[in-house]
Every structure is written in structure tokens, then in C-alpha cells.
Length: 47
Image 1 (cartoon, rainbow, N blue to C red):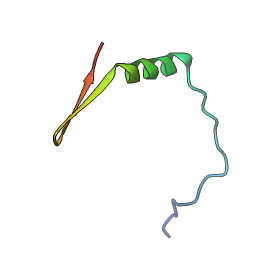
Image 2: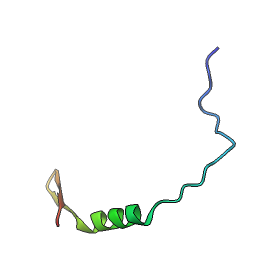
Image 3: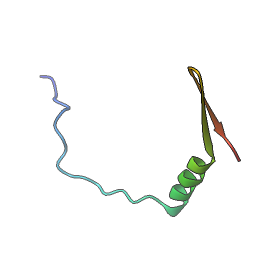
């Protein structure tokens, strides 16, 4: 019989990110530069 994957699990594990990971993501998002020209989108990481 097919297993139904649409049911949610009852237990949820709380995720606590490291300070290093949060710092990395914030610095990356600050360095990301997106330029739209006509129908093109350019993504540059400016360091």
C-alpha cells in the first residue's frame, strides 16, 4: 500500500543556528549586489 507523505510528523526538533553561521549569512547578504538590465539579472558578490 502506498505511504502518504502529506501527513506531518508530530515531533518537531528546534534548530538553533551557530553565531558563526548567522554572521556568515548576514555578511554574504550585505555583499550581494543584484543588477537588473532589461531582461537580464546579474548577481555579484562584492567583497
